[in-house]
Length: 425
Image 1: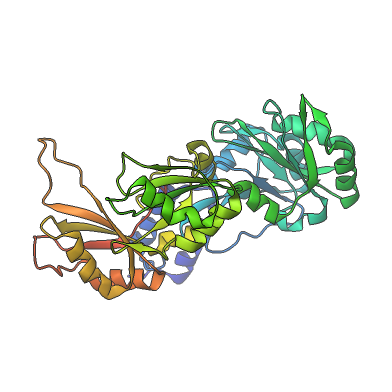
Image 2: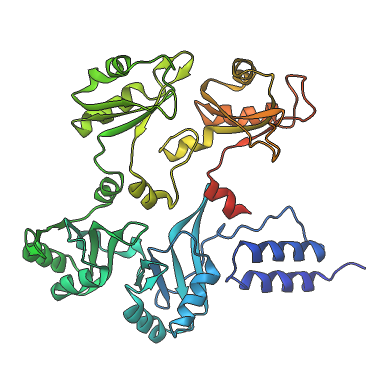
């Protein structure tokens, strides 16, 4: 007997209204749709459409931990004594990563205002939240201030208190490491430009806890600069195994004065180089990265960041097999499983070059069995020059056996960081 259309529509509406969910809850609802005869090809997308926010009753919540989902945010606000109608954490669908901000919706303006006043700067999983009635795009960019060289002992509440005397603060954010330690700079968003100017005039070069702080107007370009840093240290991959320290230095000396240079003894074909200036390091990346080929492999050059700095951006150890800080490059990185052990790297490169130009190939040894024996296959990372080539590779070789060896077909797919794979499970 067919299910009435009205019933299906009613059930769809109920499920759509249940916004406070984590991925496991979504999967349960997805299975429920199948049981009701709904189209399973319509895969639920948590953030496919932006949530509608009432201009007065919706609060912007920034600086969220990457591990937080809708239900976590909703329950946190309830534990603080507030009762929102709904909560939504925003995600970037490709790759699926938290954008570290979201929205909490209230039934009336009074509750929203009270929540913003009391919970701005509140601690949540070792992070201080930014809670505001306005979204970033509504802020007056000319009223945005950045404070640098801040004392390490200064917390976000101290920063807010220090700058609140100059006018109404819409949001205040102190940048911190994963450990909660201050990174030494923060942002203060005022309501009016005159208030920001007043704060800059009074606080720039002022002594604060024994440190002379720098205060000025902030722009998105400044924020990128603070996040990316004026790097001078580089990490280099795909150097020939026979390369000496002198060879390494000769490869880079044309770009500027070098402070130090070191080949990595623990990982053959890799090394570190430190320039005296950021411009020299930047020129080295532009001149060599994926443009210089040695022994058939494209040399990869990227800024080298400390583990602490990396935690700010990734929230995990920096353990990517082919280090490419440029986000878009991950999309052309392929992971190949079940390659027969008798197939050499050169054989693999020759076959996979049919899809496009290969920048780099690296083998990843599979884990041995409990008895110490090794599987009869290997895994490889294949980095293409562009995304279309990577896509073509998957189309040509996934679930195929181009070498006519072994009992398993190849598994070919885009490589993903561990964090992304865990979020999808």
